[in-house]
Amino acid sequence: MSDPSSAMMDRSVETSLHAADRAALARMHAVRPVWRGVAAARDVIALPDRTILHAGPPVRPDAIAAPIVNSAVMAILFERWAADEGAARAMLMRGEVRLAPAQDFDAMVPLAAVLSPGMAVQIVTDAADATNVTCSPLNGGMALAQRLGLCSREVLTHLRWMNGNLAATLEIIADRDIPLIEIADPALMEGDDCHSRTSAATRRLIEELAPRLGGDTPERRFLDRASAFFLNLWMAAMKCIAKAGEGEGSSIVTALGGNGVDCGVKLGGSGQRWFVAAAEPPEGNLLPGFQSSDRLGAIGDSALVDAMGFGAMTARSLLADGATAAEAVQLLPAAHPGFVRSRIRVGTVARALVSGGMPLDVVLGVLDRKGQNGRIGGGIYRPPRDPFAAAVASLAPTTFQTQGI
Image (cartoon, rainbow, N blue to C red; front, side, top):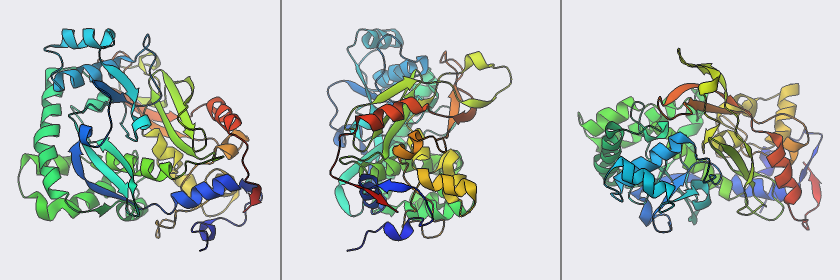
């Protein structure tokens, strides 16, 4: 059988691609992620007792970002592990509730969101490999979304509705596989980037659900207003594809995220080890009344979406020719054949990133570092190269030989 990605490789690239990366990309480009329903996290993820999952690499116990603390407190109250906010904070500070990286459990959470056992998750799997399963929480909309890292009775009420009424509705109507590339591909042609812009993909997703969703219900009204509802599903889809890039010698970026204090990366060949650096805040526009010192460091697992070629990298992933395109092809060497319309390149090669070529950019929301005002802006985050370089240097020598494209 021929290499499924070889025909999608840009033959004009003058550099060479390590064969371990070529093999990893071929596996990734064979993945066809589908949404396979909704279930409680405890039924999908093997969570240790009283564990809450967060974005990015492991948190430092003495330096947990305030928005993550707030979201964890909301989760503790949601799970009814504590009776009030004070007791929940005390449990967290005493270490009675464990915080762990979501991506270590093949889950993805946006910004300061967390995931606890009783919360609903969207299950994504490879249509061709039932063992490749990832998940993400439901997107909470805009105003009271848990990902904003706020702590209030209103946030808790919304969290209970999201994981109660809405989850129950989706569990019933999302009863057949929904291919996600088939939604994202035409949405890209309509102007989506599958990260900061997902309105076209969300519209297409709701159209898939509409015949079973009903008319004027709270759930339907919420979904009609939640223009970013597709994003969390797409985050899980990106993790599903990235997992296929794991393997000896692979320098494909398979995990990337921030926890507000540190950013971290994993490569396909680096196992479970995170390579970390301080998470600087994204650079961009802030809402009136806020200043640079109010910004939290980069946070969220959605950074992996951009590392896969979407978000801030979309324009470069779609370039067909020119000097910039040639540079982009080194970082993102091959189009995923499932994207028959956009032919977008999927999968960042860290070996190319650390060689000094095109940088990796990530579009991120900016949160208030004190956890009092939620989202205060948006911008671009450029992860430092050092963690990528350390991760590449850690890769064990393989039997693969460098192979030209």
